[in-house]
Amino acid sequence: MTTRSLQHVIQSMPTSDGAGVKLRRSIGAQRGLYLDPFLMLDEFGTDHPGDYIAGFPAHPHRGFETVTYMLDGRMQHRDHLGNVGDLGPGGVQWMTAGRGVIHSEMPLQESGRMRGFQLWINLPAAEKMKPAGYRDIPAAEIPELALPEGGTIKVIAGTVEVAGQTVSGPVNGPASRLSTDPLYLDLALPAGARFEQAIGASHNAFVYAYEGSLSIGDGAAAKAIPTQAAGVLTPGERVSLTAGPSGLRAVLIAGEPVVQYGPFVMNTREEIEQAIRDYNDGTLAKAA
Ligand code: FE2
Image: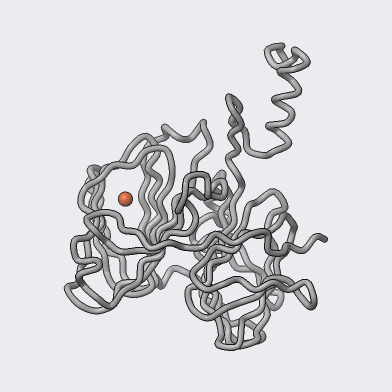
C-alpha cells in the first residue's frame, strides 16, 4: 500500500473578493495553480468588521460547486431560486451551481470574528449544465470523532475509519455519492499526535493548516508543511500526518480529478491517454 508524501506547496496569497472581503487564496491563487478537481481554496479570517462587512453581493456561478465552511461568525445565503440559508459556526453550505445560480453571501454580524473556507470543486463535463442544487448542513449534522491519540476530526464529506469505527459525513456518504467523490475533513490535533487516513488512489489530495503546523509522512521521510499553505500530496492510498509542537488545525481535502486534455475531458489520466491512443490509431470514432 503506497503512502502519500508531500509533492509541492502552494503558498496562500492575500487577496480580496466580493465587495472587498479580505482573504487568503492558495489553490487557484495563480493561473494554472489549481489541483483538479479543486479550482480554488479561500481562507477568510479576521476580527475586523471592515474586512468582511460588505460581504458578497449578488453574483453568478456556472459549471462547478462551491463549498463554504464556517469556523466562526454568521453569513446568510440568498439565491435566485428562493433559497435562504443562515450559516453559523461549524456549518457548511454545499452549492452545486450547475447550469447557473445567482446568489449573495452577506454577514449576519457587525462585529466579532469571521472565519472559514470556500472551496470550488469542478464538475465533470456531463454534469456542468445540470439543475442547480443547494444544501445547508448545520454543525449538529457533521459527525465529530475523538481520536485515540487525542484531538478530534469533523467529517464533512467522505468516510473515515477511527478505532474500528466507520463514519461517513453528511455529504458524499453511501447515500449521496458525488461524482468527484470528495473527502473533506477538519482536524484538530494536539502537539505530536498522528492521524492516518485512506484516500482513493486516483484522487488528488492536499492539506491546509490554518493553525499550528504539521508534517506529512513518517520518520526520515516526513516533510513539514507551512501554516496557511496548501500541501499537495503525491499519489498513494493512505496519508499519515503528525501535528507540530504547537498542535494543528487543518483541513484535509481530496477528490477524483475531472481531467481535461485538449479536446478530451475524462476522469483519469489513464482515460485521457486511452482517448489519445484511440484517436491516433483510428478507433476513436468506431463503434464499440
Ligand atoms: Fe458565490
